Image 1 (cartoon, rainbow, N blue to C red):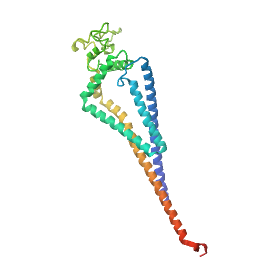
Image 2 (image 1 turned 135 degrees about the vertical axis):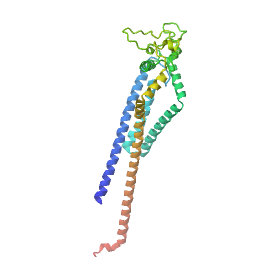
Image 3 (image 1 turned 180 degrees about the horizontal axis):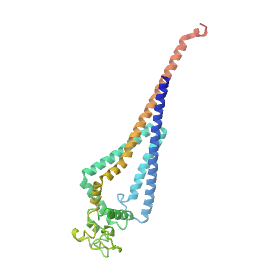
Image 4 (image 1 turned 120 degrees about the vertical axis):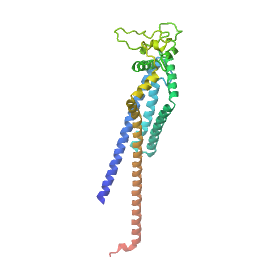
Length: 294
């Protein structure tokens, strides 16, 4: 029986150590990742401020990186501290924060799908806001050029969104008037690149310019690409949600194990206290008789 008890004790202790090690590694990895994201965001924001670029947080990747980095750094630090100190309050706080973040992301995704038209309108409106400052915001310009080239699209809703830019508006002076950026142009296979291929295209019909520039909007182009490549979309979603779910599950298991150990410790203390009490009673009952030989 003694050997069996020791074996159970050893297995329980091994389980505790595994959970502690796993949670500590999990929290530390995301803590360092949060610090890295925060550092990149701060560097990008410093560079962005040099050019006095767009002030909208939605359209500034640097701001998004800073906010994401702060959340990851603080939450993961709580997890590291909680796992090292076995603090139940911090462990529960870490688990609940991860759970709330996971719930918010799932709820946001469901709402975006239910109100799909409103979501598309929201994206189109923000893209138009970015188009207004296209030549002033280097971050947005690089992102927009990349998306237009890769997804073969132009503007948010369609190519006519570029009329929102002061340089591409048809009433503006200069060679860019009533045209679209070169990243909207259908790639030609000739050696000479015509950077003015989008000249005077905004005021024309879609059919007449579809062989010169991309006429479909980037919002729909990206959504269609995700629907056609649902395995990639599923992988991205799993990559975002699964680590958080594993963190919640791992923390819950660890909290349970710590609570079990505390309960076992209190039970052992109660048994020892009872044993000492019984020994004291026996010693007192023996009286002076115990001084004489039997």
